Amino acid sequence: MKNEHLHLLIDEEIYLVKSLVSKPQATSDELQEKELKVDSQQSTADSDTKDPSIEAIENHSIEKVKFAFIHNTDSQEELELLNNIISACKLEPADLKIIKEGEEIYYKNAVIFTNEAAQFYSVSEVDEAQVLHSKPLNTLLNSKEEKGKLWSALQEFVR
Image (cartoon, rainbow, N blue to C red; front, side, top):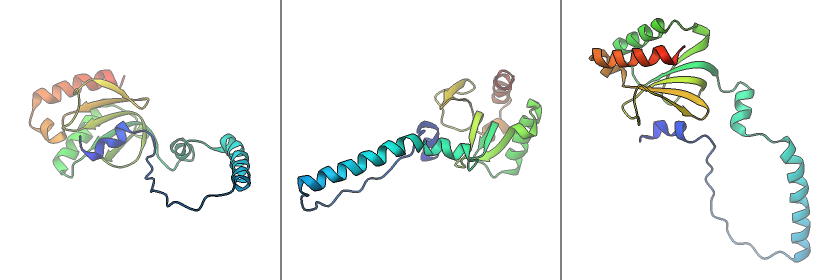
């Protein structure tokens, strides 16, 4: 699996923790004082903190859409095919977004055009979103059979 698909599998932030340099031992009084400060800070912070990814969505720093069409192409011909697919779905323009792989977006439903998927043309749930994996656009351009499979799956998916 390529790195560009990791955001589909990992739904929480990842932190790099550097090793700590050992410091001289604190006295027991100093330790108790630090523990009291930490406990009081945690009790006030726990009630005020939210998951940063949820906070970002609520604050609109990550765009929210009902349908996302995620591709990895720069070909004009492939983008034209994608626009035709979307037009055939008869979705409201305000409900959808066409994005390139790697962009951050919060979606309820997504069609992902990729070479790598456990199963193509069937809906799976990823982080509470419905995802339909399709063969890449360049494959669809050259195969009526693949276009037919995608169209059948899309009819069920966008209902």
